[in-house]
Structures are given as structure tokens and as C-alpha cells.
Length: 70
Image 1 (cartoon, rainbow, N blue to C red):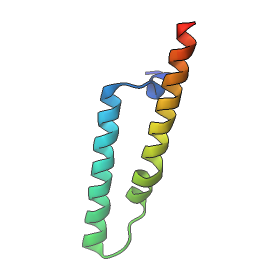
Image 2 (image 1 turned 90 degrees about the horizontal axis):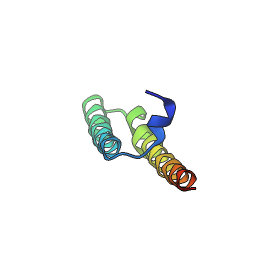
Image 3 (image 1 turned 120 degrees about the vertical axis):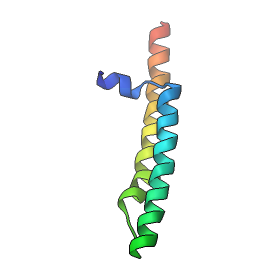
Image 4 (image 1 turned 90 degrees about the vertical axis):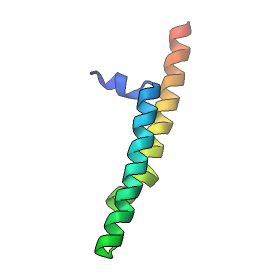
């Protein structure tokens, strides 16, 4: 798998991102509830990493589509 393949939009990738976000939210809440401390790793994934990846995925896919039309 090439690096470029990670940046092109597909419905499968979108579902993986949605599921990863849901799992990260659940793990954040579970760890925070069981240990009684604020857990930041999964929180950062949900708040920063996933939205940035989706934004980069969308922009790169649009640019790639425009370049290939010419």
C-alpha cells in the first residue's frame, strides 16, 4: 500500500474513521470511569487526529480529482 492510497477518499476508510472515533470515545470514557483519572490519549485522537485526517483526506481527494480531469 502506498502513502497516496491512505489519502484518497473511499467509503471503507470513512467507516473505519467513524468506528475508530466511536471506539476512542468509548475507551476514553471507560478508562476515565474505571481509573478515576482524566485520560488524554484517546481524547486527543477523537478531538484532533481524526478531524485533521478527514480534512486532509477530503482536500487531497478533491485536488487529486481536479488534477486527473485535465
